Length: 111
Length: 113
Image (cartoon, rainbow over all chains, first blue to last red; front, side, top):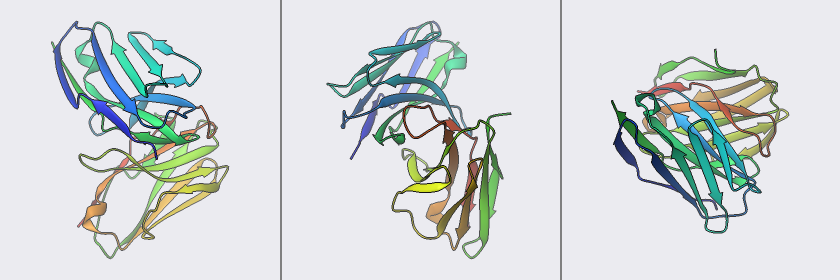
């Protein structure tokens, strides 16, 4: 059974800081790991999908890394902006694309 | 407009009512999912359909009944719900069941009174 944990649960930073969100998972036999963003009252937006054969994936100011052997992934956000304020969710599959989600990290970037 | 549309956005129903949630995707995807998001709990996978066939039923009570008439539409039929079923119900789709990102709708906020 896959279990996903995200640390910290909440984070508040001033604008411009670089920050790292952490995700750990228990079953390393995964095809991929996915990061999502959720704004209040909205659905999830896919940010990055890292294939199991990859070590990292980048999109703009976001960089996600994957270490299957240690069961860890990190999401790095460079030069944070107030518009980055949201909840960030990590998800690892327990089979195929059947995702198990972590509890999320609620990020607040202050102007 | 997102590629995945859910209706209604909000729903209030009594415990004896019957209602349905609707999801439609315009992305040409072959897999569709229902997730439940309760306050202070991680998202929970409820049902998965691939090419209109159910491939996962995650021990969901029978008062929730999914239907997938074609690869673009997914329904969740609700009857005799409990107050603890109040949550945000999210629909998602993906190109296939392996290695393709999920695209979510904005959800239906359900309140059971």
